[in-house]
Image 1 (cartoon, one colour):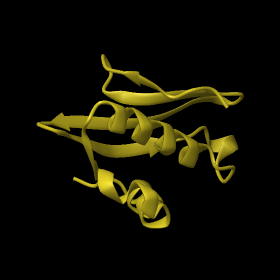
Image 2: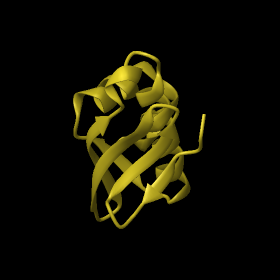
Image 3: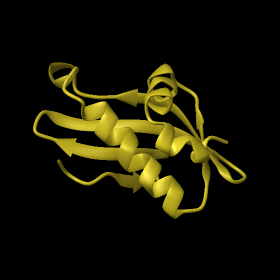
Length: 90
């Protein structure tokens, strides 16, 4: 998989895939990143790409010393399934 990058100009985390761009839109608030929507190319859904995207986004958020707020159901589910990232909840 390709690394996740923070496209600050579009306020989204992005990851190139063989089928196109997967992304997670976000809004910044003081000390927190609110992930509002995740999207993967339709043909690639169900292959774990969105999970890889969120995992990479959380790594960036952690490195930046911020917290995450799950503003979409996918991120809520991801955080519920990955208690190792519970400390990032804002």
